[in-house]
Image (cartoon, rainbow, N blue to C red; front, side, top):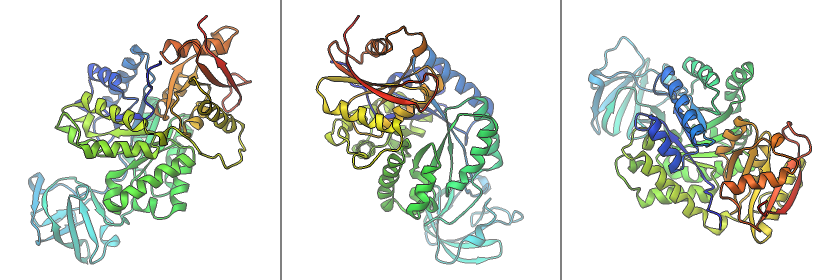
Length: 481
């Protein structure tokens, strides 16, 4: 039997613990499909070097690994504290101030977000450092916001500031983001994540910059503001305007509250699949493995539940960027994904079976999955694709069978690295002889994906070199030549 192909993809953040060529190679072998460059940290030159290392190591290993650049966005933060940190005591009163002339003290905290007094009122709950510290607003006077410490602790400079329920607004794209966008374009990254969009219109500056550079980078919306999930229409419009979506559970959980977060996560994944967009589930998925060599059972269940919900990918942040066990955490996450994928619910599809199709390629994708799921002894689904769109459409349907996306476009191959259930293979249909189908099956068999006598479902188009023209589905039996 052919070896099992893990369907759920893994995104790993690159940082000091994972920046060397040797560790990048280990992470690829452990199961990483997409590497994340966090533009909130590091220099342009550092990101340039890292992208070069990732591409070089992936090429040496003949792997199609995507690179995702993550814009910092307008994260609202406190300023620099006296001595770099302060202890907030429960029940004490402190002042958050936007007055730059007031010196920082233990009870006077500078805030870089100038509109703060306009957007808060008495009894609002403010959250610092991803919700670890909680303040209740007592009064607003000029540039000062007087608060009572509800849940205190150690506060360090430049930590994030949120309001429970959202409502602290800022421009979606900052001047730093504009510079980082140009860097992403220069490096020809595959995906670009936009932080803190509140609505579809917040993506317009990014789309404009990419279009001006004739860039094919796919735009990922990080859903992390309460406003983005306040109503279904806003959420649907944001997802539809995106090329992919990230459930950014850190700031989103802070703003909406953790009890509401699980339902929202499920809704975002469901909507993303409905609108045929890849979706990444992120933040604290195996947080304990920053310092420990094994995950907690709760973390295993968290990852598994995201897989059962239909997420395309699960993401590691500090676990691989600064943690002590980057290789082990990837292996643990991969094993968890495989375990969850054995559940029957993720191997059977009823997606869009009750609807008519307007696009031929979507009809072909659905037909291929239905045929493959309904026959015995099917070894693989092969998608000959220029743009990767048919492979993406196939990946929206549940199946226990591997989908092989074969393309002669290396950018397409890297983008498909994010799609659930799709293994991308570089394959130039124009130089593989007269019998394209036999050649394609041979290519998949060489990767361990086929056994003699197995059936193969293949999709392709009449017009080579043009995306979106898939109009054929064939069922063949593979035998070695």
